[in-house]
Image (cartoon, rainbow, N blue to C red; front, side, top):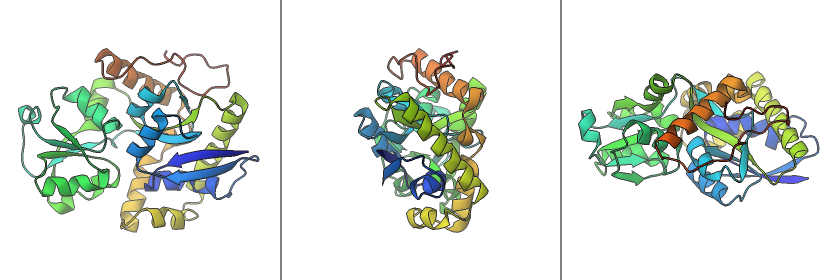
Length: 285
């Protein structure tokens, strides 16, 4: 059996998927045909249900939830790793209501968190995440919402942090910030979906136990990132929630959708959003 798989070229994704797509662990007879794309491109593909398995932003999942289920392995959640709002100049909270803000995509979780914190901030412009720092430096925008490895490089470019969206979320909700997740198409039979989840879980474990094994794959897709930034990126975004969402991870995602739903930021979602073996029934508890 061959399944299509989409994930981003960011170090945390190539790190966890390397063993799975290069047959370094058993894939139980499944072959994966993978594509690499920016997360916002993957988000939009998910709206059409193009891929069997895909990385997507937690915000985007709300719009693709009728087509996909969230897998228990592979997610990016955590504390202290949320998006940062940066600028070239000092700004106060009221300034953000009218500021021109660069965002890494309409359906990114970063934009969702910004919408929860500052619903009045509507003057937004979409950029590829790697271009946001320069947009701020060139004064195309007043502020930028950065994700991924940009959080490790913005200070070197003379930029300052205005707000830590993850810290704001943690203070508001008291749970880890859900950033991205791996979802599987609902058209995939349950037995196969659970098999894929096992395969991904093994791939994550292999990566963590053999960190040098994925170095070539990670480096060739990390553009001009240095080894130190790559390692920081992986250390920050690959953690125990990546191994297994568990109850705490599921609760964090559920809370994100509850608060966003109360604010009319997301559409109504199906009752069942998590891939389970049929015995777990408390998706929204």
